[in-house]
Length: 531
Image 1 (cartoon, one colour):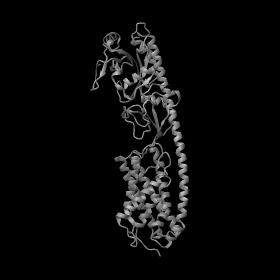
Image 2 (tube, rainbow, N blue to C red):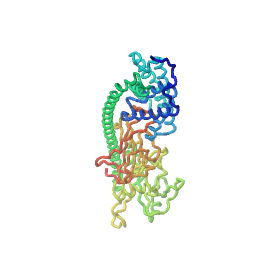
Image 3 (tube, rainbow, N blue to C red):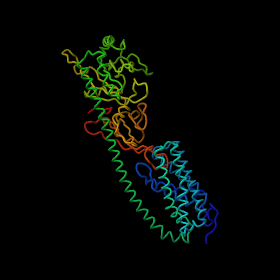
Image 4 (tube, rainbow, N blue to C red):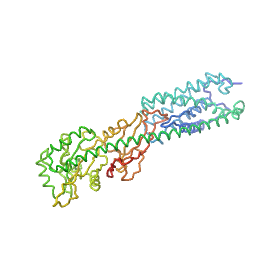
């Protein structure tokens, strides 16, 4: 004979449960079932097809009343925080999202219990009649689960974890996962936690084992399918990374050809004037918007410095010429004495680059390293990421240097010493945009890093974030750290455009680095170009 109970009656006297022990047990169980649900995530994100913890939450609230809500909230909050921590995204903002999602889980369990009691009376304890079963599933698993999905997705979008394009998919996926979790696991949980004896005792022996075996087989099949899907996605990301790498390599070949042409012109015209240099380079700069400037930098021994400054002053487009460097305050001053200088004689466009005329790039360690590599190999070398001296806005730049041979002379004291370097000043963001145009599909994000550069300045480019200067490599980057290797590409999917199942702030799953292929391998900042 069923007993009449008020909505959310306390635990029956035959099975008292102290509040602290009940909260701990519910939180622990919710955490385990929630973690199990998230292991079923569909790549590339957290698209879980069923969330068993939602069924547990409804069952314990029906069985123990509102005393169980603290355990539901705590278990959900811990699950979310742990997920964010493991993903490397635990911040005050994601902690706030985790708390909001926990409130949604607790509110859903409370409303689900209220509706189930109002719709079935005390029949939820036995669920013998079909109409009671239908009412229980529709009210507890169909109606109440609207709450958690709505609160969670609102919190995720408000925190910027998902973008507007992913809201509808995320909400629908969240709702379906919770609804299925309630419909399958709420009755199973009631079988376990209801008082022993009677109808549920027989159901435990007849129903629970077959259902658990069936669920286990389905989960095994699902995990196998998800693993296959992940491998397929990884293959797609690798292919996308290869396409991006080829585009960048092709662009660097274009730059090499530009410098090679400029080198031949300088070697054929050793006494060229600025007007000749400007006329030769103007069309190139117009056709290559990612090259911010082209220059010719003389290699000047210290014993020739005074005469070089005097002769160049007569032909310089800016008037009196002196070799300069930057002091500790980043101001341009006369360069200190050193064995050699690599100073900018001509640079185009001149208007935006007047301060660079006379600057000794050999005075700066990053540029000096590229100079040494270009001299030793005789081929194009590229600097590590730098903040452009000439740029009025903050952005990452590179210098590409190609040695220029001196005219052969019988009385030359050192015929092997180059006359200087043809130099291209490259804006990395524009170079990547041009190189990857038409190669990056919506939702794909990638970053380009220099494993040979110091970690605090190894980031070259991120497609999802404007990089305003040399920056640290983001956490989680795949890199081998070996000097002399090429640039590395890591690819991933954007959380703002790709549907994801999220129980908390998510970290992006990067795939990389992508190998540079063939003879078009782009130059590292630590090695000469083989392109």
